[in-house]
Image (cartoon, rainbow, N blue to C red):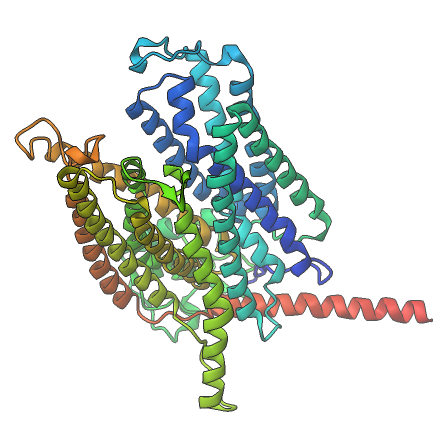
Length: 597
């Protein structure tokens, strides 16, 4: 009587012949080459804007900041489209082609002479002819296209890869997924490492047109690789009711706000799918439970048991999906500050320009912008050690202790990893403060330039912080959402990075304006010349804010409660998937019998 006859939508594979490990090279190559191309452009773009477009430093920095922020915000739109309408395959396809077009337009700005203002070596750049409106629009359009492309690729590639190997009937399914997540993130780190070294070197030593041309070639290869695997992919269809369902829940909860909640064991009082295990809502965020209360079955439901007005009555599953999203938001918000802290590395690059960048010999200098390679190295090395050494050792120890008893998952939990990452980020900024104080003393008192290799520890700590916090965040979100919301799990991380860029810019603005006359002059803590400022004070402030954020994380993590990795809706999807596979096996058996006959 209180049951919808509507079928539960499965997000499982549609064919046992599709998917599997054989599809992963196509998917990982797609995002890897996209990142090599885009990050290689971003790392050195400020020099292109200053030298070829005659922008002032602050103007060029603001352009790049907006580009980076936009590239982190568009993935949430891509996630919505993939999960609710188009599906992940179509969104990745659109994003791949759009990124290719964006890099092509950028290459045109370097190849076509009239696409840029006339060459000028005058200083300051204000004396040079500025870029015309049409020239700027062509440049901005390339940035916009690449950001749109990133919005299609970045939130969906990881979830699309998980679709190919997520097989609930496999006992090692969880372990396989964790390994995939770790190595996917490691491949991302390696791709960015190549971008900030090889691509930047080509741009500096050979030319902008050649550097952009290499990026275009890599993106074209990425596009070819992805579409080569089209016939092999598991293509999960978008659930068109997902995001409308969120609006339905809010509307129904508001309309029913004056109703009293029925007892939890009163199954006839709740509206749910036929055969669903989600027959009663959970106790958390109880105000949303009123969205699935059936007031009058004859008025609320049609003869098939389906709600007549979805804006007045939602299913229990719809309510729980919205709850899942709302419940993780406090923990998600703690990742915003770590992104803000990492975005301050432009000051570390400026420090490097005032230090001795020789490595082993005076004939070899590390470019200031390439020191971020140490962040990527530490991230990649830790992921490899954790997955291939630490986890196997812990598993072996657990087997010895527990014998044949059911074993707990070895290693750190998702929430533990996020906490460790936040703590290490605080350590990184405190180390940066100590190193800067020492560097400044050497420069002002001793008149010496300290070795830039002193910056390596703070860069490496940032890599460790990201390895713990970023991977922990993504796995946590993925484990707490139904598979129909998998792309949102990844997009939440990039959305946090986007807000982190904005928060970082806000902190910088407040500090720069608030410390203008710190030494009786007109300069703040953060002038262009670090010898004239107090970057170390700024780093200590970031450390303090990081500690406050860590305490906030402990509170919201405690408030969140138990982190169960298996949800009822996943059990439903597993059963639906197994049913599909059994039907396929039965069909194959019948075909074999026919051919045998």
